[in-house]
Structure formats: C-alpha cells, structure tokens
Length: 266
Image (cartoon, rainbow, N blue to C red; front, side, top):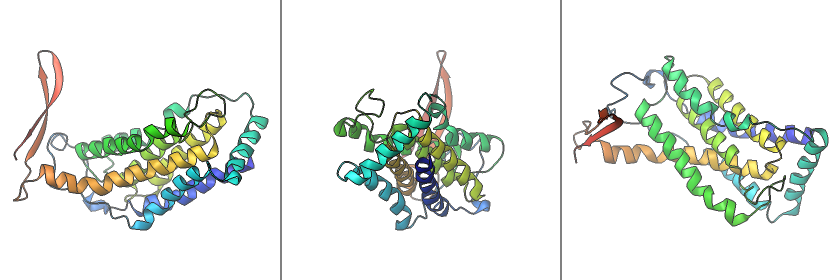
C-alpha cells in the first residue's frame, strides 16, 4: 500500500507544477461562451507559452514505462506494487475509473456553462480537445498490440500503456490549460481526478504501475502538443490575410436531421 501511495504521489506532484506553469493565462483575456461564440470563430487563439522543460516530466514518464521492458528493477517495482495490492485488497472491484477519466473534461464545460471564464471559446476548446484525444490515440493505439504486455489479471495482452490513465491525464491537462490561469486549484482538482483514475486501474488489477506512468506521460504530452500546434493551424485555416474572420459554424436542421453548417472563404 505504501508503495502505491508513494508512486502515485510522485505522478501528481511531478506533473502538476508543469501543467499549471504552462497553462497560465491572464484573467482579462479569458473567454466565456456566448450565443455568438458558439457559432463564430474568434480572431485568434493564444499560443501555448510552455517552455521545453514543460515536456520533460511527461517524457520521463514515457521513458520510465518503456524501460520497464528492458530493466528488471523497474519491472520488479511493478510486481511489488501488484503483490501488495492483491494482498491487502484481493477482491476489490470498481467501475468508477470508467467515469473519473472524463471528469476534468466535463468540468471544463460545466464551469464555462456556469459562468466561469476559460481560456478559449466553445469551438476552439472543443477542437483542442478532439486534437488532444486524436494525438493520444494515434500515439498509443498500436503500442498495445505491438508490446503485447499481459494484464495483471491475465485478461488480455493490451496492458501497456494504460488507456484509462492516458485519457484521464489528457483530460486533466485540458482543464489545466483552460483554467489554471484563473486559479491553480483547477489544475490540482484535474490532476487529482486523473491520479485517482490511474490508481484505480491498479486496484482493479488491470494495469501495472509502469503502464499507468507511461499512459500519464502520453496523455499530458498529447494535450500540450495540441495546444502548441493548434494556434498556427487555426490562423492558417480560419483567418483571412487582412485579419478578419473567414469561417462560420452554424447549427442546421434539415429534413428532420440536426447538423452543423460550415462556411469558409479561401
């Protein structure tokens, strides 16, 4: 039990400061959803201010997880944590981790709906979220089959990296990027949910410790990458040379089917 607590505390306290530091945004530049912002793309999106060191910790997480295939001492940590968990909680089962992984994402939209301003408007925020998830799954989808690591419960060989943990930390970094500029406690809350999700994957006997460490690293880097590259893509696709909006999204309802109308001038 002590091994699990110490290990997950390292995840939380190592990754959280970097997530908060790279997500700072002046409160007076934060944006709130309005009827117009839900359909019209604003002029610009502020680029991520992260320095290179913001990527060091999640990269170290991925490296640690990858080295578990080559270094016996790291693999021994996996087995020690697993043995301790099964000894103290042999019959533990819960499905809460299936829902906790989405908690920070739900929180971002709920907070803005309640009037708490975030960094980006609805459309840009949603595109950033989709990009983050796409980057994460593109980076990890093939790794589960390629590595073929057996899960602790023996159910299949798709253990590394942890998808639940990765998705949870993708979501946590998403909330940190959107709201930590207003208060660091949003980042603390988001990363706490993500860490709890990762811990639950171990308690549910679905992942080894190195699986969730790697998943956390992939998740954080995926979101940071999306926030880093999106402003340039956004400027290229959705802004005219004179700096005016050239794109519009509108809800549509035709022949009984709802949809979205997108128009752009190129």
